[in-house]
Length: 158
Image (cartoon, rainbow, N blue to C red; front, side, top):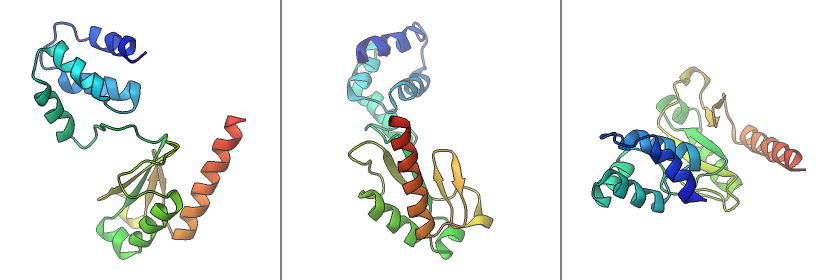
């Protein structure tokens, strides 16, 4: 399955030099991360050393080498958020999800990230769940939001 999907992506870039970043973007769009097998195949396809492919993949923070959760929870730790209690919000997220920053839950429902700033300082502290911004966050509000997300996910599975 991976091989067929990857070949389809690579076929778009046949004969195009300097397409490594674009290829990574398409692969991550398709799989949610950059699988190790895909990196090896990209190196063969572009006729460049695997170390170069890996180096580029690990240089950029927006490329992931491990599978991410279905939902990405980002907790802002910028100055305004920090001053207004973001540390407690982050600790609550870690406790509630049972993971540390940079990890993914075992069921792949959530990944948790600490971010420097989301540009919503007037609403600090702020979290983002995927593209949704949640303002003036407290540990209690965070627990409620995650519980609501879990309930919605359970309803959509039935």
